[in-house]
Length: 344
Image (cartoon, rainbow, N blue to C red; front, side):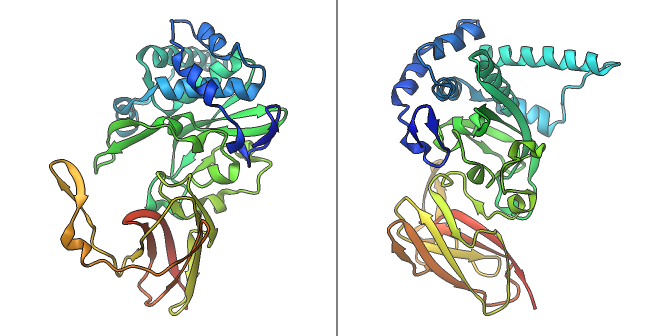
């Protein structure tokens, strides 16, 4: 994503080779001193982006998501509150609390998004990097098309020579499973490169800051963010929607919607489900494992598509006025979802 390590852009970040930095960062241990840890991680690197990478990788490698803490705070409403008479007192209490949380995260090797982001900010600042904590909205569910999502996530911006670079160290570290009631079940460690130095057009697919100062040089606004199509997070790094880019489609009965999707993985079968007609799920649980349901496989309907390199194209006709969403499946897995608004 750059010509040299000191001149780079977000669009071609994939050309950076961080293999050696990643390997070395994973070997370093925390020894009860955050300054020592940071200096040990960054001492062999000159550029800010190399130092940032070392810190980013160390956190994703060593910190797990704390599902129990999330459930306690966001589901049971046990949010930390401060009693103070002046703004100065509040600021001091908040600062002290954040420092304790950072140390707790390091010692327990787990935390929630705010903990990840505070730790990343603190370590970057120790290394002389201008890093900032951001809180804002995120969307993780298909039904959130056209909505802001939830205001309970945190991520970071790093300012290098006046250019903003975006990082979500929490989502880069892995994912979580959850129960039907929204309670988190288990953290699964799996590094996701997508959330390292993410271009704003990619981050805005599912992130939007509460303070829009952090996207001041971007064309993206709240409406564009709200109306993005849903892209499943497990595929988000592989998909680039070329058309239609908005996830809220106004259409009449009889209209043909042409989907053009850049997808850098192989796909053999494409299906489209809607609220009026859907394929039965091909998955069932057998001995605690997900396996194919052979009977359901016989009842599947597929869409013809063309493939030119890594660009997939197919058409969908709006055939009745009751349709209000379409879900696109790649090889029986949800990939994208759109809302449909039928007009007269």
